[in-house]
Length: 53
Image (cartoon, rainbow, N blue to C red):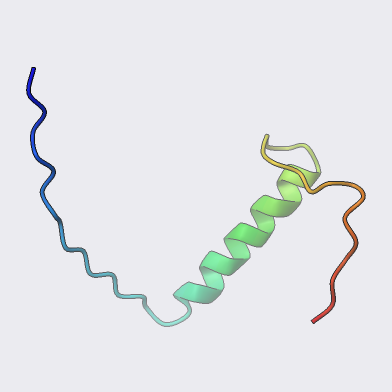
């Protein structure tokens, strides 16, 4: 069975005002829900030291 050749698809995304903040907030919420065990997902290693900017 021959595989079809993949076609390149161009995609343009435009964010509305505040979209980046909403996306960031959603990832932060998801992170804490994973930490609380509400959702399954990768957890941070316990021995990892916090890094400051």
